[in-house]
Amino acid sequence: MGFFRFSSDVAIDLGTANTLIYIKGKGIVLNEPSIVAVSRNTRKPIAIGHEALQMHERTHKEIETVRPLKDGVIADFEVAEQLIRGLIQKVQKSWFTSIRQMVVCIPSGITEVEKRAVRDSAEHAGAKQVYLIAEPMAAAIGIGLDVEEPVGNMIVDIGGGTTEIAVIALSGIVIDESIRVGGDEIDEAILQYFKRHHNLLIGNRTSERIKCEVGSAVELSPELEISVKGRDLVSGIPKVRTISSEDVREALGDAVGQITAAVLRCLERTPPELGSDILERGIMLTGGGAMLKGMDTTIRNRVELPVYVAEDPLTAVVRGTGKVLENVEAYKRVLM
Image 1: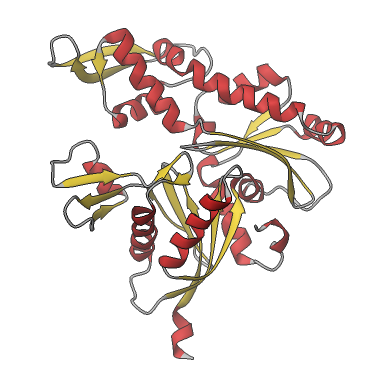
Image 2 (image 1 turned 120 degrees about the vertical axis):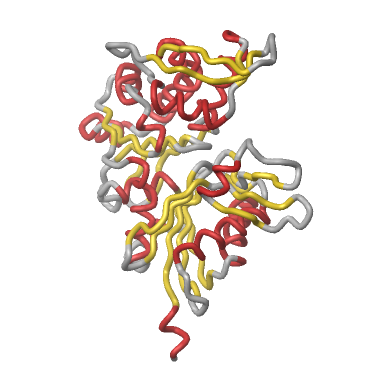
């Protein structure tokens, strides 16, 4: 009997960029980058989360930083398991704790094999019972939509590795569109733009900072400027350049265009009755990408429907996964 006192229920938003953990009865307890620093010789983890991110792109030949998720799915099985286990250990210090139930959210467009990988990683990290939920469904529950009603809701969840678009009604996903374009793709676009147009080589962390500080999908007034440090590709010497938000917007154009095109495709396939619900209720944006300045305006201009950014879009998915965890029986129908 004593053993069960220490069991807990955990919900995880296992993201390409960040992993968030929710513990039943405690709420969201952790939000850290999905990255692990491992020793090249032993493959043992040296640092996980924030500490590993500090080392990213600054390591020597004995240490390697690995992001186990690529495009929303597990690319490195072993490291993914170390990540889940390591992050849970950060939250639960006691040795006795066992995990009774774990709800993990996954992209709606993943294959059976990829689902299996998520389930196995969770089980190896110590979960007795693993449930899976689709990200857009979790996001809808997280922002307080009643997913059981016979009413259409459209969610656009722009994450690190994927953008998940879904029309939800009656506890199920009616139409879904999953594209492997997200925050990472945007960072990469900025990095390539600097290489091509400014002969400047910058790192991933720098391109992410540029995206967060001056990235936008629409014209800003006033336009912003940022100074960027990188290596000049001609002379090979570190240099500083000042870049305007217009440059960055040009770099992002393609990725933003792909996201709006996917929203349009999803709307074209939506049954007319649900379409009229969406016209009335609008489209909800969640995920980190929803925080890109003017993302909502761009989509609104393109599809001519109301578009809203959910409050605290970064945690919408894990909040929804947590709600499901708090009452698994009631949400049986939305689980996979």
